[in-house]
Length: 507
Image 1 (cartoon, rainbow, N blue to C red):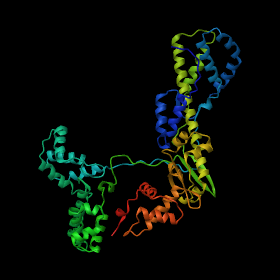
Image 2 (cartoon, rainbow, N blue to C red):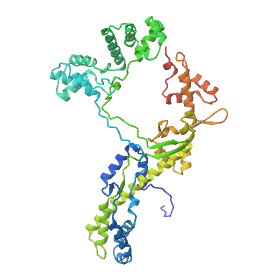
Image 3 (cartoon, rainbow, N blue to C red):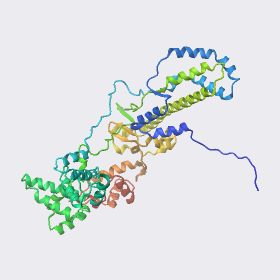
Image 4 (tube, rainbow, N blue to C red):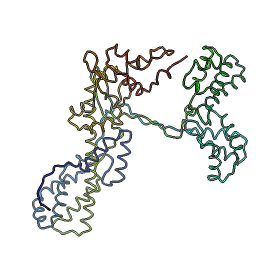
């Protein structure tokens, strides 16, 4: 049976402006200028630059205010749509235009003028192709060589097998090559600088570097470390699995060598570069990345001074042409009925001006929210920011800052995500200031970051011939007063990118 009834429901929906603000909060300072450029291109009513003074506008504004009563009588005879539009124009013209301008002057004139360095890259692949050009190759072999070099990744490894390279050459260059031709050229490329380039895996990469070092020593007649290099080559060639797992005693037995001999061979291997391309100045073809801090904290004789880094944000204002269009429309429409085309044009202008206002307001609100959040974090972690001692970091979660600022936890999270702060102890990620708490034997709450710092100190000071197990680390921490479980020690160790005891072992 159908029934009709009334019910009340309370729901909350985000307005387009709030959604825009949430998105802007997530953007770090490094990419804010790009977002502003996109908005400038999309919205012609938004302009970049300082507000121009216009005395005639101020004079006209007073005339408009004097004739406001006559205008209201005429508007009453128009349609409701015309009334709303004219009311909007009156409100906008009588408003202070400077209130819709973003002024990004948040640093003093005597501050150092820092500019983004421009990197001129000489890529790793260009470096290899230059060496390829030194070989006396016919056009076909040169094409094969360039295809092989193009298949070497940014770490210096050849990522394609021989059969795949044959297919690539046929499809890309209509060149038919044999496996012998490709493999022969790969061997020649593997002798290029840097040593180890063109290897198919880590084992081959280390072997190529050791062979290069051995040939170089023989050429220079430096025979002192030749035995240890030869032993290192044998270890990599025949016992790579045992070596990678650090089964040193097993290696000694199978090779019939002493601990000192194995140690010398191990030292030769440790000097090698597992990513040969990383040593090249051009690195890879990707652009260099720089950390641009969103906040700057300066210690002024014991008082912390916080400022926003807004140098990437240009001055924003409403375009003068669009303001003049609205004023012109108001003058022409007094006592007259405007046609549909004019009305549509003005509605378009209104939409663009509103969008520009919302964007500027969102940028200003973004700055205020970010400053408020960072200021609360700065006050909360004042002891650490004054000393740089990680042990003085207090336990702090998103809710703590949300309670202080009155902001939502999700808003604090957006501010903290992908943001950096410049301090006298280095540029820090905001997320690193947040940590859970852990209770000591005395009932005192300490930050998990403090426990991780102590755990790091213990591991650095351990005897590398007999590194501590997770159980032993747990016992040492408990002796220091930190009530912690073994699985928690393992979790913290993994977060610190510290391997297990067996892989920390040294000869």
